[in-house]
Image (cartoon, rainbow, N blue to C red; front, side, top):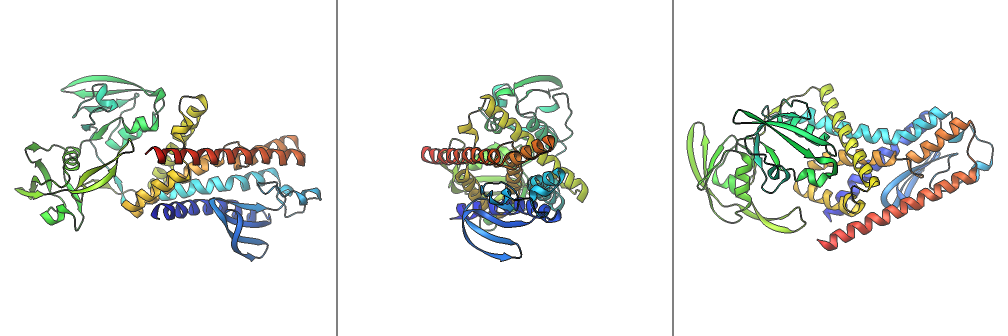
Length: 442
């Protein structure tokens, strides 16, 4: 149930914000709004207030704002056979129509910037001044080309990262491009070349390098083995059984492999060396290949150094993150169109979104915020695509009519909307089928 509820809540908020953008822009320019609906027909319930029907509809996969004097998904064109009224969309100048149509996308982008920037402002941002690699995943892409633990990253495509956050950003921004990076090892420099032209997002996740961080305890969750054993925030773990621990990732690698098995922890606290026995709790976890396995958890988070960020700078951080998300989706869409990536493997539908939202909410409800921000940018990106029935399709028609200085024939507009709805319905069926096939396979 948490999966369905999480998806409906997240999508409803995103749809509401999107449609609110259209609604406010229409009101600003004096366009009559006949209906503001969350969900697609049939209408379930609502209230008529003034000239607008505010309602909830049965299909919770979107929403719409019906504007007087506009051919939209409803195909209601009866009023268009009459002379335009001043309150109708078609009576407004081109620039106002453009603002109204793009306002939903703009609101989604603003929401994402506000969420991501607000989180940075409230919590600060993680900061690791080192660019040294603390762990290389065995069998990962980095491991296969010879990257090693304690390699220090000097440059990525000619740019010099000053901290680990910049390392992650530069690698992330270069997905889909050939990437050259230079490291320092034992006083010598070595260059690596990644052919990322055919790399997908999943490949990026399997790149397999992690920052160097000491195994220092951050938060300790009550009721978990670490708390019961007496671990405290600030303790630095230096050994587990006979293994010397240099980094956080080394420690967690041992813990997850030993569910329900006692482990001897050696740690430092205020200069003293202490020991304790901790038995990780076994929990089910889904692996990258879709299988489930039992892994160990002791209930601690790593200590992360953060630095405060002012409000304006935090909003800039949020804006830049949203731009990166948009660029990533644009490249991904281009790769699907060019045949480099499979649409079947790359596209996720409502069921996959429900799975992700439920997993995130089950772990930490607040983690839904960055997930919502990501989806908000994706929703904005999809809506601005020049596909009939989407905002981008309406925008193209407005621009064509502006260039022609006269409206397109009514039959042409209706036909375009019908084609657009057919495309959208086909896409919805495809992603639903895709989600179901993935679920059955897993």
